[in-house]
Image 1: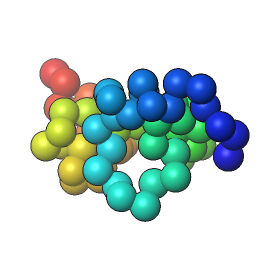
Image 2: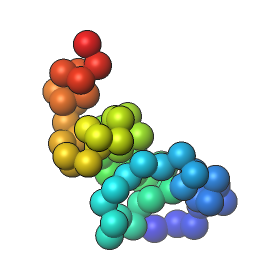
Image 3: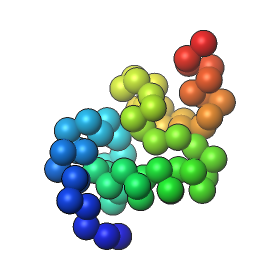
Image 4: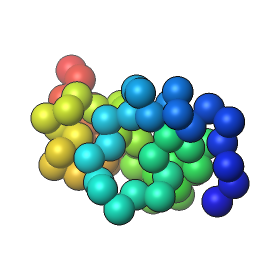
Amino acid sequence: MKDCPNQKQNLANCNCSYEPCARKGVCCECISYHRRNNELPACFFSDDIEKTYDRSIKNFIRNNK
């Protein structure tokens, strides 16, 4: 993974609760990873929904009607 000059600033807005995540604060890596898995990153979800780890697009739509 590449160093991100904005990682510290990005971390201030990152609500990912998955502790071993190596992509925290490296938004381009996070988005690419979740896109490959047909998911959305944690920052698209409220904190309580994010903690379920269901990052599916279906879950996003269900919770944002």
